[in-house]
Length: 529
Image (cartoon, rainbow, N blue to C red; front, side, top):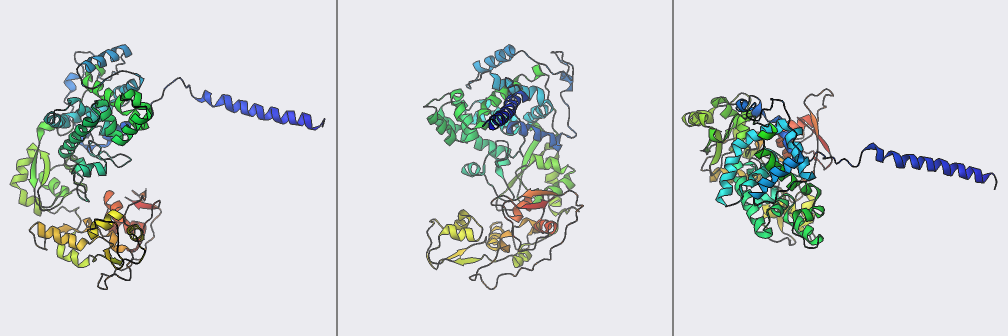
C-alpha cells in the first residue's frame, strides 16, 4: 500500500500537468475576441475575375478621375471611421425599400470589397458598365427595386461564366432545376443560365414570385440564396419571426452572410470614389455591343478567324454556348458582337460559314455518323422488377428511363420492352428533318455523345447493333505535361467529363488508356487536360 500510493500520486500529477498544458495552450493560439471573416463563395466569385482575358488589354478610361476632387493618390486606400460608414448607409436606407443597416457583419464585407479585393472590385465596376443597363431595363419592366442589380455582384461578381461548387451557373447563379423551372434551355451545347438577357428575365420573375410570398425584400434575398424551403423552416424554428436578422441564426451558414454582403455591395458601388475605387474597363461595354440572329452552325474559331477577334472575347460576350459552337437547329440563335464587327459579319456571312480554321477538328456528315451510331438497347421487364431496379442495372436515372420510353407512370408490366440507352440515331434524324436540311449537313464528330453506346448489352439487345472494337490500352508517360486529375462524381459520364474539359471522347480514352468498354465509377480519378 505504501509503495502504490506515491506511484499513484506521481501518475495523477503527470496527467494533470499534461491536461493543464493542453487546456491552456489551445485558446492562446488565437485571440477569440477578434472576429475573422473566412473566405467564402462571395469572395471566390470576386477572385474569378482575375482570370478573365477580357481585361488583358483593358482600357483604363477612368485615369483622368483617379486623382480627382477627393485628392487621393493613385495607390491610396482610404480607411473611414465606422460612424461615417454608418451615416452613409443610413442615407441609402432612407431612399431604399430594403432595410439597409450597418453592423460588424456588413463592415467585414465592406473591408473585403474596399480593401482586400480592390483590384477585382475595380474590374467588377468596369463590368457593371456592360451589365447594369441590362439589369435596370428588366427590373424597371417588372416595377422592382433597381437595387436588386447589386444582387448579381453577390452571386457572381458579374462574371457570366461563374460556377459555384454546388453547380449554380451564370450571372444570377441558377441551379439546374430552377433554370428549367423558368424555361431556360440547358443541353450539351447551350446553357441559358449563362445568357445575360434570358437569365436576367428569369431572375426578375423568380424574385417577384418570392416577394409575393414574403412581402419583405431581405427575406426575398435569403430565399433566393437558400431556397424558400429553408426560409420557411427558419421562420418555424424561430417561432414565427419575419425579420431577417432575427431569422439569421436559423438560416444556412452561407445565407447568414448573404444579406450583409448585399448591403456592403450597395454601399461600395455607391461610394466607390470615396474609397478611391475606379473601374478597369473591359474591351466591351453595353453601348458598344449589339446582337444578330444566326441560323447555321458556326464555331467561335470561324468567327475569330474572319472577324479578326480574340476567341476569348467572343466567348465572354456569348457565354451561353458551352463548347464554342453555335449549333444548327430549327430556330435562330443570338450572337453578340461589338458593333464595329456587326457589318463585317453581315457582309461576310457565307465566308464565315465556309471558313475552316486550321485548329478545328475534323467534321463529317450526319449520314456518315448515323452508320456508326448504335441503335437504342432494350430490356424486357421480368417479374418483380421495378423501374428503379432497371435504371440501376444500366447505370441510368429513373427520369432518363421515363423520358426515353415516354412513361408517365413508374409502374412496369412483365414483358414490357424498355429502351435503356439514349436513341441518338433517332435524335439526329429529328434535328435534320426539323431544320429542313439533308443528311449531308456537316456536324462536329466529337460533339455527339456516344458514352451510352459502350455499356454492356442484354440478351434482348437487337443483333444488328453495331459492334464495338476494343482498343488496346496505352501506357501513359510519367512526364506528362498539362495533365491534371478529375474526381468522378455521381451521374458523370466519360463524354461529359471530356467535353467539360475541352476534350474529345477519343482523347480522354487515349490519355487514360481506356478501351471503348471501359466504365467509370464515382470516386475514380481520371486524367484530363
